[in-house]
Image 1: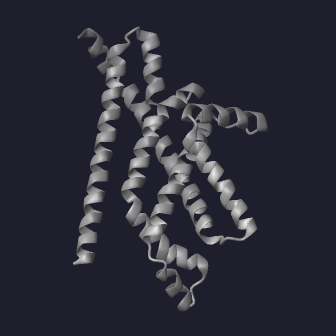
Image 2: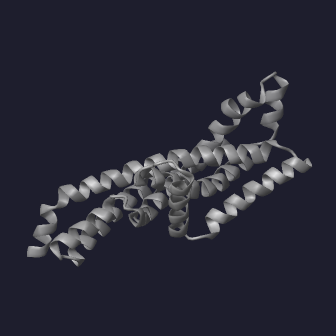
Image 3: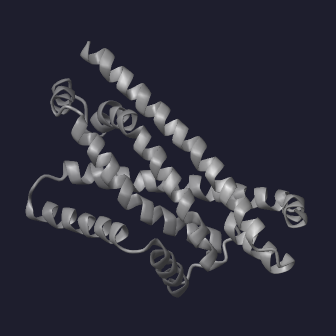
Length: 227
């Protein structure tokens, strides 16, 4: 019990680490959403010419790479690549870039699925009333897509939070790294890891409830539309 009282004593530091975890995850998921949306719109808009097929192939390779390789390797590669190119980014910025590029591949597939759920006739209707391609996407298509895929976007946010501890490999002081430091200073191991496991569980469980609410809300809207 004394060990757990020590953990409670350092709880403000753990919560500070959690704050960094949440901020890093929010920044990463926002950038990833932009990446995924842009890639999905490009794939849906470029047609089937030879240059278009090349563009689609490059996008497909990127998506396959980030989905088919370990996140830890991607974080390390991106961190080292940035250091070699020259920009002196902090570990936090490098970590956000790494998580964004990783999640961007998953976001691209999520948004693509949402685009396929929107009737193609709406694009033709937008053209018929004289809207530009940009306005058709921003005013008609994408708002519907985001409503449809919001549960999947929230689930991806949960995934980003779950993989964020891997940023400790590049010395990002988020929740897990904070716990590691406290373990090294106090020589108390299991209680600190139990504490951060509980914290991660609470955060992810709350977000899971949000996902369930979003799915229920979408199903109710779908039912009303059918009726």
